[in-house]
Image (cartoon, rainbow, N blue to C red; front, side, top):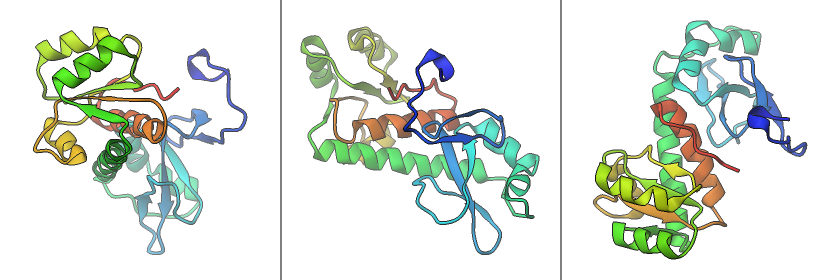
Length: 203
């Protein structure tokens, strides 16, 4: 069993967070590697060469890893991790989430606007409800119950969502299942940890 009582998917690689000591899927983690100059940098795309060091996508966990020099301990060598490492991770994850949402928009999986989302929720289920962190509480209260069990993504501001959707700002959107939607959910879940929002389910 994994955390939360789910059956483990044995095909998923498992990694240990160097800050919390917990082992599990890489989905809620951020990979870090050491560059040629000995600096630790976040490999949020998980493609950089070298031995990876994994930390839970949580500001407190990353800050602890820096403060306690846990990257050097994991690398078994002196390495440099800057105090602003969690800020750098947040910026990179924000961009990755925006890029994933842009791909969903191009694929026709994303629908924006309060009226459009309201109609969508009224007549069919969605894979995720998206709401700007600085949006209207009253409108949010109308849409959330209609989304039923669908995860809610609320870690981006209206301006940040606007950049993803090529608008000045976006407050409400919804995602259909399939394609890049799973990636959107994973990036949102990781960014939530850096911004102190509730975790997004990626099941």
